[in-house]
Length: 88
Image (cartoon, rainbow, N blue to C red; front, side, top):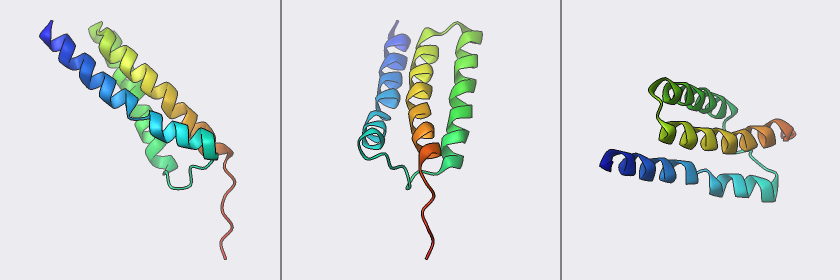
């Protein structure tokens, strides 16, 4: 039970950490300082964590990484919509 509580708290902290960046992207529609390669690699990692969670039947891993992937998808969407900056 204690392990589940620790895992739940860790999952909450890592999942909620996306909120400020997603909020900023929604307000400004800008993601210029965020690397697309990092976003895609992190997305792959989160997807693998979800698979791992299913393999272990661990709902904390599944839910936390599912929510994280959903928020990260918002950032990828904004990044893909952003027009490339013109170089002078």
